[in-house]
Length: 221
Picture 1 (tube, one colour):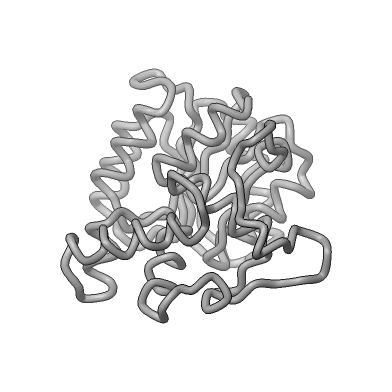
Picture 2 (picture 1 turned 30 degrees about the vertical axis):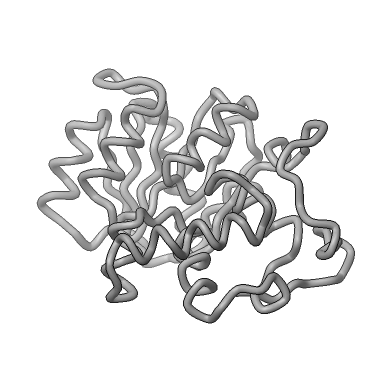
């Protein structure tokens, strides 16, 4: 595993290095103190498997760094690690294509599990972001399964075609429409049609809501 850590706190980078070594003893770590350095490193080396991004850097703050990184390196999975971890920030980061969000207050065990999950191609969402507000992220009553009840839902149960299931799987990985089109060898306009159908089937209005609905349903892809 090859990981790019974008953080200006040496202790945090060191802690991440320890955790990654527990997952893969042969893993290598590159550290960038700001977004500019990260973009230069990733331009010179396109073999990074994962980027861990702090939201507060010297040359950008908030979601600007995530947006730029996703635009310029669309094939690089990005996980946000931040001291700012309120629900709206977490959901906004996921909406902008982050593969996960890890609060800096998380324990080493949570950090380890989250990185392992993302390395396996899945998405990590802190439990705080999964707690729904009243009427938030509604899921159709025809599909009542929830996390932890032992039930799972298949894409066909939601009325999704195999191609729509493929689109949903890539959408949940934070891929843009352009990248989904490239991976599935279809046009962007076709991807948009499939995304609309997927959101309608999940009875949600955004990608982040689709992610949370899929997790709550225990959706198997």
